[in-house]
Image 1: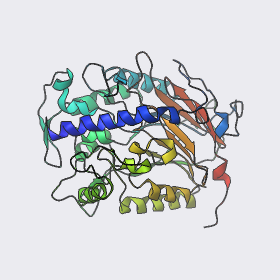
Image 2: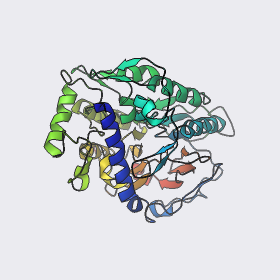
Image 3: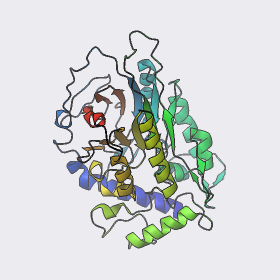
Length: 419
């Protein structure tokens, strides 16, 4: 078995074990009171974390609306299971993505955000999983040669999403990196990667969301809110698709794992024997390097000066109470400290990677941290995604399929900080 395939298998196993162990805790009644499953938009309000009610602003259009989906993980293979028995629907996932795109188009959302893992790591060896392969060998940035259908799989998902004619903001996760190099992801997903001084590509960027409905009397909002999407690259520091000989960031990742996980490097994806949040130090995760942290500070400072509100998007979760430890960004604490310093600017943070979802409102800052439920693990005909309405005083999450609906008040952004 190739080293790449071993990494993919063990990564899936460790994530699945974590989901099983902690799913009950994450889905406690205190965090998620209602589970909404439907084929059309509706709202189930979550009152324990919001002072707003679903009756507020009933006739007032939102300032912005965006679509949200994550962990499609399409692969041209038969349906299967995780190693702990969680069903996974690799082909249906693409159908669900197409249905989401159609809904986004009908709703005329201002933009769509894909939180990563658009294809599955099993694309790197579809024959093993019952699929057929007819493609050329792919050479990754780290020198590994694999036969992957990842190119075609991504193209097929993007074709399914093309029903939506607006802007799609992509981030990427570990599963893309099992198949394609970052320069190929830049081409496929239009991620504006930055070539840092170290020679490594990193995919962080911002986007000022345009309200395309201002000329529509029925959908136009009187709000003067300016809303910016801030997309983090949580695989900045990581082993995946980094050259073992020349990559500074891979060397840093090696040092981090060596210092924090006694299983590394022989069982690099195993958190066995690690306690609490230390379980995040596994090779299918990553961290954020200092240049990106400095960019984050500068971007948030500029947003404050321009009186913009910000929503942060990333593949990996940032807050330890919004997910299980094995899914966290390695240096989540550094990122969280920065975000808390801009609680007057940041409305919420949305992430993927954790599949079963999770939520917490940070007590110190009031910022909402939501791990979004994965498309991959919803059985046909269920289609899991969300539409998010942004009002002056709240976010309304309209969950579809296995995605939980909710209402989050954003009163924390009304407090002016002394800077």
